Length: 111
Image (tube, rainbow, N blue to C red; front, side):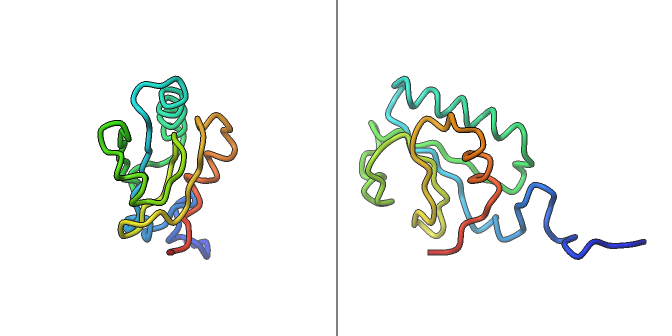
């Protein structure tokens, strides 16, 4: 049996180190941009292996301190959380499918 040199990395680009990261979507209630971000993220997650991704959605209307904790200045914002810090952030309604896919499948470096 011939093994590829990257058998440890699934075809979606995520690796076991992803488990140390959590994906967080910061939204502001049911605003149009936040609603689009939720829908676009859910659609994108259907196209990749999400088993290694833990997703949390946080409404900044009920938890405004979270934006300060992460250093986020706008919403919606999708971020990779590593030990309580945002190691990568993607702002907007996540309608750019190529950028969203790259963000979801490329594990950021630790802060």
